[in-house]
Structure formats: structure tokens, C-alpha cells
Amino acid sequence: MTAAQALFQPFELGALHLPTRIVMAPMTRSFSPGGAPNAAVVEYYRRRAAAGVGLIITEGTTVGHPAANGYPNVPHFYGEDALAGWKQVVEAVHAAGGKIVPQLWHVGSVRRLGTEPDPSVPGFGPMEKVKDGQVIVHGMTRQDIQDVIGAFAQAARDAQAIGMDGVEIHGAHGYLIDQFFWEGSNQRSDEYGGSLAARSRFAIELVEAVRAAVGPDFPIIFRFSQWKQQDYSARLVQTPEELQAFLEPLSAAGVDIFHCSTRRFWIPEFEGSELNLAGWTRKLSGKPTITVGSVGLDGSEFTQFFGKTDEIAQPSSLEGLLERLDQQEFDLVAVGRALLVDPDWAAKVREGRERDILPFSREALKTLV
Ligand SMILES: Cc1cc2nc3c(=O)[nH]c(=O)nc-3n(C[C@H](O)[C@H](O)[C@H](O)COP(=O)(O)O)c2cc1C
Image 1 (cartoon, rainbow, N blue to C red):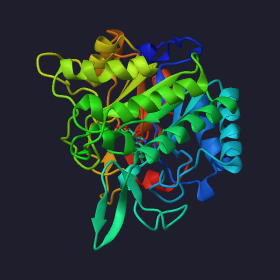
Image 2: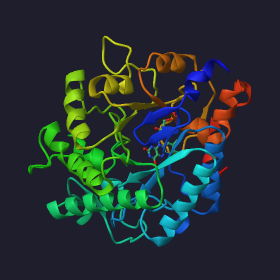
Image 3: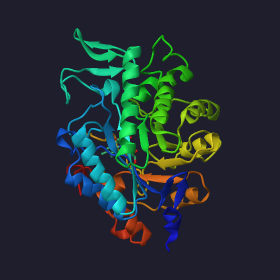
Image 4: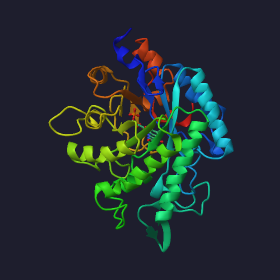
């Protein structure tokens, strides 16, 4: 056993039994032309599970709504071909000893006209946006809201049917659900806008619908973030009290695990305590949490996931992370870029072969290994 043994302890929550505490963070890879994961995608996830990732959260995969997608070659989570592809991913990951949940995604107003699958469909968001006389974002009606909620519930039902171990709802990073949360993107005057409680109504109804679709025992993970891709300094909540008020109705609606997305896990969330967002969320909600953000990396800035700058992040020690895990600040640790570039990251950590770990560079985005 190496110092990293805390990462290799099992985790149990109801029917969910994870062999290790290492979670693969959801990462859009854009290798699914036509929306169906193919054999290369199956192998990509299988390798990470075989090397010791306990839980894979898939790349964002779009629910069955015409405006859900924002980027080329992103896998769907609807339709026979896509679901058949995902079923193969599930079977391969299970055969390798891992567990897997899909990250269910709707990009909202980030979508632009001209995007697949139907280029004539604009973005859908809390607020209408018009540019040069053209509606580029359709302001969602109550019916649209119900349609999107229905699409998430159907995707969750399908996830259960093909053997997924739960679902993750993407409520982070300035995509649709987060666009409703954030006052910067939601100035609605109906019951879905106003206070943070009212801006959370869409997410709460969505989680309730997913819970009703899958029954009481199927794990629902909810990912949220303070930061937005539109504004890294944005915050939904300023104090622990506000965070608690934000979390409570989501827990009551059916969330089992909160995935607290930060860009660097060692940054304290509020003054006066070392706890990060996952630490505070665990303490205030009583739910298990997943931490994330530059695990195993030196914290080099990454400005854009799909961005243009060349960027290299060097491997770094896990010491600070392991200390926090030992102190039960959070339950699970999601790893993004380090696992993207190095499928054997978990095995190398387990065996104390840190020196063999590959550095992350944007070059890695070009291939699926
Ligand atoms: C190429 C790439 C694609 C990403 N795609 C998603 C995504 O689809 N959904 C999501 O919630 N986060 C996405 N993220 C964010 C990661 O899940 C993770 O939170 C972030 O990379 C920080 O973790 P890291 O420092 O370990 O990479 C992406 C990150 C990268 C680098």
C-alpha cells in the first residue's frame, strides 16, 4: 500500500458500491459523430475502469430535446443507436470492475443556430436573446420547461434500463440548469425567476421528475458550480447560510450525491475555514460529496475547455488531497485532465509510480486513448 490508500477504499451508498474513491470527471470529447458512442469510446472508458477508476461519469451527453446540444460530435442520450452504444460502454465498464453514470446535459442558451442535429433550432434559455433581428436564444415558456424536464426524466429512465449505475444531472458551468440558477442569466418575472429559491425551481422540479422516473433507489448525482464558463468569478451563494438554503430543496427533491465543481480543490470556499465547496456541501447537506479541480496537477490555468491557448499542466503531489480525504472533508475525488491524458493514472497512483504519470497538454484532446 502507498500513501494514496485512502483513494482505494470502497464507497457504498444504498445500492451503489464503488470499488475505489476515484471518479472520472465528465469530459466532452467530441468523438461520437452522429451522436452514438462507438467502439473507440467503449474502449476509452473501459481502460479507465480497468486501471482503478471506481466511478466513471461520462462526458456530457444530450437529453432528447431539440436544443440540448451545443457542440459537434457530442454523444446523444436518446435514440436507439446512441442508447445501444452506451449499453456497450456500460457492459465494458462493468466487466472491468467499475461503475458508470451518464452526465445528462442541456446546454441552454450556449447553443447557436447552425449547430447539429437541427441547425434551424436556436438556443433555449431563461431569457430571449435577439441579434440583428434574429432570435438566437428562445426564451423558454412554461411548456418548454416541462418539455426539458420530461426529456431529463426520460433519459434517466433509459439510463436505468440499459444498466447504468445512476445518473448525473449537469447543473454547473453556465449551461441550462445553471442559467436558471444564476441571476446574471435569469431575470424572469414568473415563478422561475427572482430569488435564488425561485431561480432553483426549474432544477428542483427537474430532480423531482427524475426521481419519480427512476424510483427511490437509483442514485442521482447533481453537479453544480459557483463559476460559470461565461464568468469565472461568478457566485451563486456568498455565505454558508445561502449554500445551505440552496442545497436543502435539491436534497429534498431527491439528490443523493452532490458533485461540487471547482477549478482548484484546495481553495477555501468561504472565509474563516479551510473547507472547499465539497467540504461545506457535505457538512451542510449531510450528503456525500465529490470534489474536483486540478487533482494531481499543478493548478496551471486552463482558460477554456475547448479553447485555443496551448497549455501544459504538470503532475503534482496528492498529499494535500489525501489529507482532506482522510479528514472526510468529502467522500469521492473526481479527476479530469490527468485521466484524460493518462488512462492508467489510477493504477500508477496505486502502485506509487507517480513518476510515470503523463503531463496534460491540449494535444491530448485530439485523440481518444
Ligand atoms: C476537455 C474537457 C471537457 C470537459 N467537459 C465537461 C463536461 O462535458 N461536463 C462537465 O460537467 N464538465 C466538463 N469539464 C470539466 C471537468 O469535468 C472538470 O471539472 C475540470 O476539468 C476540472 O478538473 P481537472 O482539473 O481534474 O481537469 C471538461 C473539462 C475538460 C478539460
